[in-house]
Image 1 (tube, rainbow, N blue to C red):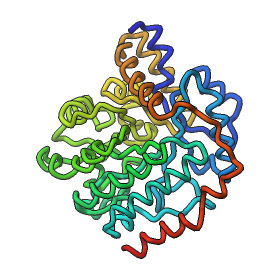
Image 2 (tube, one colour):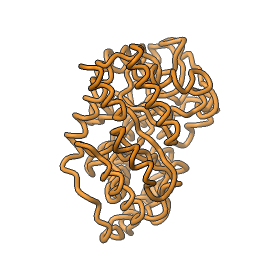
Image 3 (cartoon, rainbow, N blue to C red):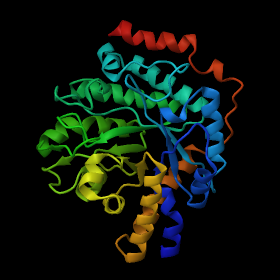
Length: 360
């Protein structure tokens, strides 16, 4: 549990974005020298399946003893980073309206198969938020529905579909982002949902997903005064350790939403926020830009030196990530690009997506 060992592992706490269709030399050096835990890909990193497959192979060449998490937001609807020839995935509300967990499972399996084909091993999907507030500017059709029952069924089915293909689904946004009227990309949402209502409604889709062997959950940048009046869930020890870990008995990985959202940086600062998040119980932090990731890396090392961050917390968080990587990412194999056209955007996949519209 030494300070030196914790410093060596700091990079494993980060999932970083970067610019471009290829991995720049300085980015590759950052990934390897800082032993970064993973990357997140956006539309700016995508041109074609073959290109992104080559990119993920290059990323994995930067790995140390274990592969990197290679992640993306590929929900469907308006949140789908990889466009043509990837199958166009209907939004969650359409999947939910079909009323068919079987169709939801097939969609999850389809997404997992196409992502796995290009080397992606984590999808920040499905959305477990219940669309309880019609004025919600950020969730809306990204939710599978307005009732706990339908959202729980669909989330579990989509997650299980991903898992059949070896892609880890990361359900979001704990403890629920459906009952807000503020977008955390631009401001800090605050809600006052009583704990009993939270337990009987918002938390149930998460609980049911955990029973489906989901090993990743993303926190929400949202304050629920009934749990913690000071900190949003991402920075809240009461939410992560108190509700998620202790009450719900969840023992796997906790990942932050993008730490560059204004809900975080405008209220808690770029240097303080990563330290607060790791101390609160997050195991990995997402930064959409490399510049911010580097800043967070330096802030976390500084916090270890000052004693603001205890080495044991870093060790415990990275142990969770390492254990899951050993379980689901080994042995690692390079992505082969020759057969991508047989795996992505196929007629069969188009027919599966078409069933959503027909079922709805």
